[in-house]
Image 1 (tube, rainbow, N blue to C red):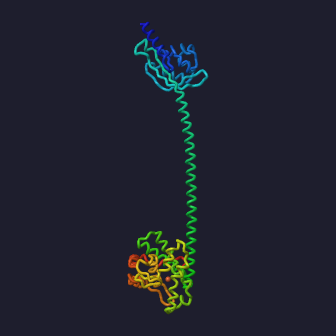
Image 2 (cartoon, rainbow, N blue to C red; image 1 turned 30 degrees about the vertical axis):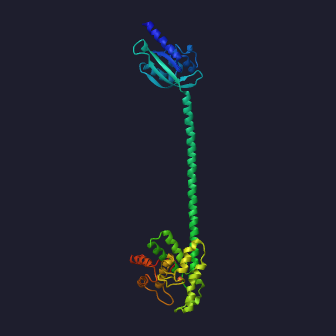
Image 3 (cartoon, rainbow, N blue to C red; image 1 turned 120 degrees about the horizontal axis):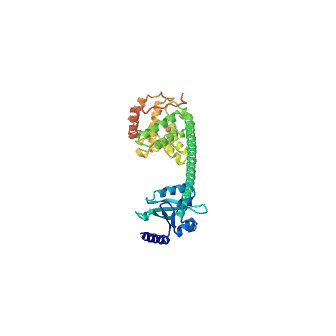
Length: 365
Ligand SMILES: [Fe+2]
């Protein structure tokens, strides 16, 4: 029996010498019975300093030694896990240890075969990958922080551009008002007239289904509809009675004069059309070109109605103000002759729902 055991152990030792990883035989007391060359190399110790010693003694009096002792106390349980080998220079070599009793009954079951695979290369690679990950994470944080700062900078810039655009727009509108009021001043108007026309034009445009942006543009274009009146002599503008033929012709020139006064920049395209054509009638009986129907620019058709309504409901040197009801009746009667029927319909809807009312301005008396 003993010789059979000895021959088995001998065969196992020959096998351990042939395999390409560290391997050792340990008995139930934890004493190393054999260590192959590869294991001795990993430990950096000659076989004589390994064989015959307790395995835990390689680790000195440390937690690792205690852990190994605990592991070997469960001698009959197969084991596999990460551990380390202590080298003589104090370094730790990361390994995977696998332990298994040689048999299920004595004497073989009193011997455990342990294989030891060096994984220090993988561990080093893992550690390097972790470090690289940390570096990339820090870089990512920096990049993200810079991107956020750039985004905040862009937002501040956009806000400044918005503010400047608003200021420019306000300055433009102010210049337009000033020009309109300067021309209206000859007509003894305070400027409220042009702002009412702007308001009526805006709400009529919206009622017709035009966008807010277009309605707004038509509104400021309406402000300048009578700018050409600055070329009409005062005695004609302020004459309390009816105009004679010559005076009427001079008055009618304000349409063409207005178109010429206004800039040819695209910003004033609609304003020029409105200035020229706001006295054209839907049936072709207006001036200065006798245009009819949709040949009259839409903006001019809207301003025409707004202008007449405001003129009727305002006091003039030659007439008292009409009531809104009387002015409305006049507008409705003019549908299809003086005014575009669609615009009259939009006007009627606004009047019937109480939305066509004269606005009040802060600076009005
Ligand atoms: Fe006019």
